[in-house]
Length: 407
Ligand SMILES: N[C@@H](CCC(=O)N[C@@H](CS)C(=O)NCC(=O)O)C(=O)O
Figure 1 (cartoon, rainbow, N blue to C red):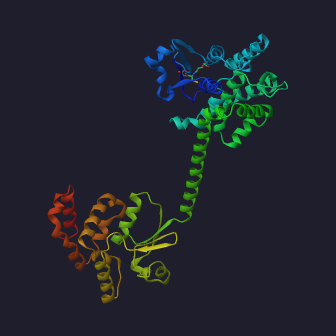
Figure 2 (figure 1 turned 90 degrees about the vertical axis):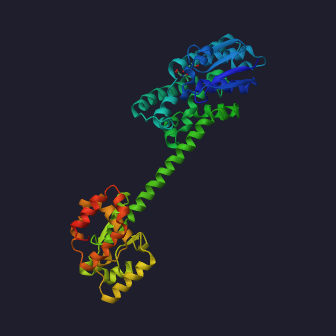
């Protein structure tokens, strides 16, 4: 009938019991009671421990809770357990009991609570709690000071001047282990002043290797993950900084449909940009400075860091050629002309977009500036009227087209 340990390795008294069994070759079955899933509150677990806390054990039909009572029971019930764990000598045993009692009334929830409220809470979907962390830190520091100045005053490597660890060493060391999840600076700030505690902790880890570190490894993993998160935050901060230094530049004139398309796309998608006004009516697009940005001398064009690009989203090759042709024939390159040269799909997108950003871009004014020739281009829309009518806002579009004199 294997001994059953009802435990969650996140809990220090549970780790204490597990390590004790491992160090002393006691066979056991580890039954995971997930505290975060409140499995300790289930009716099944209440049968094991009516106090609804872990650790708890079942040794045959015998049930027991409370970590210290459990390890003392195991030390006595199982054969061959070395005497130093729970000495038979009355005085030595009484001293071990004294440390254990002090531990239960003074120390619990100091280190664990500090680490939880100062770094680990978000791992469990909770907020950090600086006030609670400050309170726990006080308890923690006061307790470390007591261990340093009282229990570690005598000569031996372990508590009470012993050369071998007792269950008191095991219990206190497990309690302190959550500090391993802190970053080096914080851990050093807390433990730094307590040289004896640090040496005692190292000695305890060594003498209880490999089980002590293995069972407490959860805190090394936390530390690793928290460090990764901190590194990622630093990286993304750097990225944001870099992005800020290289804001996307849009070379545009809002008179041009394709420019508006690019601007609106950026706005709709929260893309930061600097709008550089290339005033088509003043032929800024033909300036040598702008030719550096776009040798074709048309807007829109963008600069994303060192990357330069022209043409908005829907320039089928033929259209570019068409525009080039237009430009060569009449020697002009005005914004309205570019707009008039758009295909009907462009017009549809233009109208759809306009419905969203009407106030911002005041396109009505722009539409009314169309020349006769450009209007005839817009009349292309007639070919796709049936599908437009099917759209929810089709009547509105028709009304606008009528308004602008396109139909
Ligand atoms: N004095 C007990 C403390 C047990 C204890 O507080 N266990 C915590 C986990 S560390 C628990 O079960 N908490 C759940 C609850 O209290 O609802 C011991 O040493 O075993």
